[in-house]
Image (cartoon, rainbow, N blue to C red; front, top):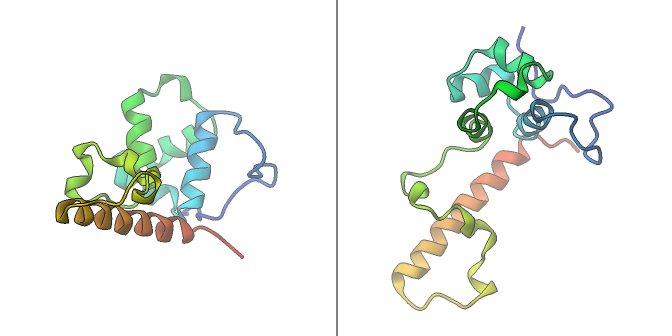
Length: 129
């Protein structure tokens, strides 16, 4: 049976720090409105292994690259140009520094704004009320 995205323990409120990395991953998955099976498929891992990981089993044996893949699996797909090193720009709006003065700069910031909107929409799927 597929575990639904909105399945969370009552004691896992947003104000409570996660007990382990698997619990944090579970929160990310729920916030994205995804099932264990969806995240497992996108990350290329076994769904049962992911369930155990979210429960806190074996979290110390997971490589950093595996955690990165699991977290990215809860996020919307990234455009091909995204991995050119500009991920940090989502928190650096052009009006925080200066307006872009070139067409390529304006195009770049428009692309970043579009990705930011997609991310916000993606995470909005898991929100209720």
